[in-house]
Image: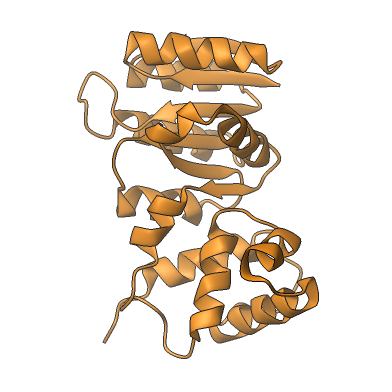
Length: 213
């Protein structure tokens, strides 16, 4: 699997690169600025990109903007964002683009198996959102009217990219019960039943975009 890596901290960048190599990934480019990231993404068209939000020259949202620009030019380009902070707007922009997106806090990189699992999930067109990010994004008081507490629990785990089977194990529910909850969530959020590979992502996006009152 071919990866483009963008991280401005040398030690972290080289550490992630070595870790990816040890798991059989091919890092086709490792860059440290926003412009270099955009060029690398458009040139190499990797299977997945690992991107720090804050990159030179602005050290604000340069990495994210480069990734979003690349996704506009290469629809469906899988991107896994790494950040030290929870940026709600960034998460919404990523989710708005459909599947093949992730948002992890940098602390998660220390758990290599979890990080690699998230990277592979994103590369396959799924989602991977850090539980701590979800805890802030899906905060009490932001819930759309009508969602029950159990439905909110299912939606939070759904946002992490987990399957119904795994969600069931986490919540001590049968897979069939989880399927019923997800159907109820789609209905309450106004997502029709027509085939849509990103309905789970759209459900989370609808939740995030809800504004109370």
